[in-house]
Image (tube, rainbow, N blue to C red; front, side, top):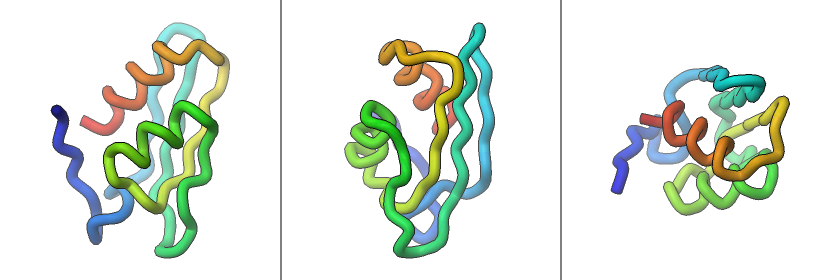
Length: 76
């Protein structure tokens, strides 16, 4: 289990960008009420972690395991 620190219990503390091979993932904190603006696998991860307001963009890959790995690296 991984514990993710959240700002106000709903979003990440700051914008984050990570690159692995040809894949890039960008996470941005969002104002209250924005919701999860993200694709399928990322949305499922955010919901499971309890993050309710975030904007994310995955560029360069559709492979789920790479997206999952990058998201967990970013959030730790």
